[in-house]
Structure formats: C-alpha cells, structure tokens
Image (tube, rainbow, N blue to C red; front, side, top):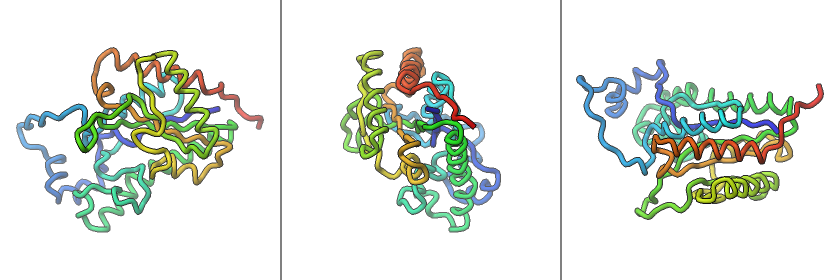
Length: 255
C-alpha cells in the first residue's frame, strides 16, 4: 500500500486575488488590516476549534513525517471555505462569506477549494498507477466539548465507511496497535462523527474503487493536541508508528 496524508485546515493565507473583495466585509477587513499597534488577540479556549486550526496542520505534518509519506495541506484559511464539504452543503461557507456576492464566492471556490481537491485527486491517481492500494488519511481536530457543554469521549477518532471491508479492517488493526502501544490513548471508531458524512474522503470514494482506495479521517481531540508540549509529539509519533505497522510496505506495481 501507499500512504497519503492531507489536511483541510491549518492554513492562514488569503489568495491575493481575493483580498480586495474580502476587505469589504468587517471580519476580513480586520484580518487583512489589523489595528495598529496590533491589538492583543482575545484569549480563546484551546478546547474549542478556532478559525485557524493550526494544530491540525501541525499534527498532519508530524504524522506524515513519522510514516514518511506525501502531505497535501490546504494553505488557505479554513474560514474562507470548507474544502472538505460538497459544493451544495449548507456549511460550505461561513455566514461572513455567504453574505458576499455570488461572483466572490465562485472566486473563492476557484482559488481555494478546486485546486486543493484537484491536487489530492491527481496525487491519488498517480499513486494508484504505481501501487495496488492507497490509504488516504485526512487529519483534523475536534472540540473537546460538545455544543451542549458536555465532554467529548475519546482522544482519537477513526472515521470510515463500514460498508467498505478494507477500511473497517484497517481501522480495527490500527485501534489494536494503538492500544498495545499506548493503552491510555482512547481510540474510538466513527466518533465524534461518521465516516459516511459529507467529507473529502467520501468524495474521493466516488472517484476510486473500494478495491484500491481506503479513505480514513483521523480526528484528534483538541484537549491534548492543542498543547505544545513534549507529550503531544510523543503521541503523534506513536500514532505514526502504528500507522506504519498496520500498513503493508508499499511495493510498486510492475510497469
């Protein structure tokens, strides 16, 4: 098998072509032209998912480095457009973006969403020309508290399509490997969401056969992944090592 790691969030850039139209909105105007001197950023709870989910980007880089595979990360702000959503999903845009003109929203899709998804589809196609299988890991984080204020259960979520036997088996193997490597790490399958919900991996399943493509979302609880401490690196390294253990060594197909 071959491995590919992607990350929908974590970027902080705004395309140059979009700066002028975005500057017309109060929120993005403050982003593009912060007050001088810079105002002290408001304190935020690390348990909640921020607009810039840098922790997801850090985790994706750490896991890709541990498994020694390609990483494709969205370099642009996640509050411009949710690149993991389908084009007609109600949460594709945030309220600040939905109020923009149709032309501006289309420009955002063309500059951010389309190139990112095309790059992933292209790289998967290239890998499948060389390898019989590809495991695609989409990395993100989830809030430690629910909307009702309760605590989320679990440290790591593995989201997959249970009707795809290879995805189920791979996640079961990874859960077992992580249990033996780090018993205190609580790994849950299809929690806090479902692998069949609208997502990038669900979209890629429509393009690639279940015989060759495994699309798994690896979601990490912000209660620990947002803490810049040595323990975080240790956990991410353990996750990466476990992924390597359960993924057979990639052997290129004969030309």
